[in-house]
Structures are given as C-alpha cells and as structure tokens.
Amino acid sequence: MRKRTKTKQETIMTIQPTNKAMKILALIKEGGATAESLMAACELQKTGLASQLSYLNTRGLNIAEVDPAKAEFPMKGADGVFFLGTIEQYQAKRVAKPTAPKKTLSPEQVLEAAQKREDKASGAYAKAKARLDAYPDNSILALRALIAEKQLELASALLHLAETGDTSEED
Image 1 (cartoon, one colour):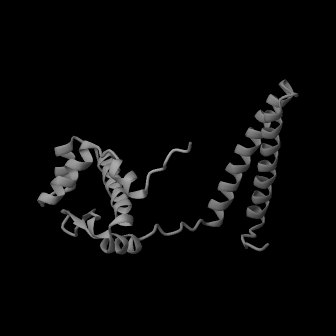
Image 2: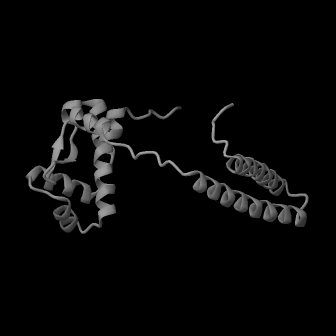
Image 3: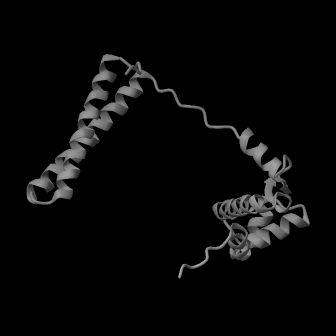
C-alpha cells in the first residue's frame, strides 16, 4: 500500500522553525530592529543573520503559495530598520536589486589569465597522465586524463587567441 504524500500546506505547517528565526521575526514585528540589534539579541554574526533572513524569506515564499495574505518578508528600510513586507514588496525589491557590473579585462590581463589557465591545465594534465601511467587499468583515471587533456587543448587555444589579440566571439 502506498503512503499518502503530504500536501503543500501540510508540508509548510510541519516545517520546524529555528528559535532564532522566530525570535528575529518577533523582534521585527515589535519594530525598531536594526541588523546590529538583531545580531546582539540572537547572538549571531553577520553571516548568521543573513542566513536566518534568507530562511525567513524562503518560508515567506512557501506560505505565499498557499495564502499570500499571510506571507511575511523581513526587509530593511532606507533607515536601516527592518520591517515585514508583503509579497508584492518583496518581489519588487528582488527585481530592483542591482547586479554586479561585468568586469572588462584589458588585453594584457586577458593574456595573463590565459597563460595562468594554460599553466594550471598543463600541470593537471601531467599529474593525471602520471596517475594513469601508474594504474593503466583504472577507467576513472583514464577519464580524468582525457578531461585534463581536453582542458589543456582548450587553454592552449585560448592562449593562442589572446596572443594574437583576437577576442571576437565568432562561432
């Protein structure tokens, strides 16, 4: 006989929250909670607080699937004070979040990076080949040697392109 699987709502209701996450949620509901006060009250480092806030946001998304009106998302205001936002506010914040600009390398930096990549691939290939020579019947080592060889070929091709100055991305 097959076991009955839980519905989405049953699963959400049985998730055991961490005490720190619920304490953070309660402190935010009280008002005036800053990152420093939350870290001090819950004895957390900055990364621990970020982890708990991420958990609470995921919890909010799960609850929003069942009942959007009950979803609560901890958000930091412009003044640094946390508040509980709605699903609409959370989604707007996620869309408006800036992405890191793409770093453009100079030709010299591209050449240097390509040389480092080839040196690293060359060393990896030498090690993989030596291991394969020591154990020629090992199929995993043979596969690793093949991968290292192909990575060395790719690194050599990229180095050649960097040396010739051809940075166009044509197929």
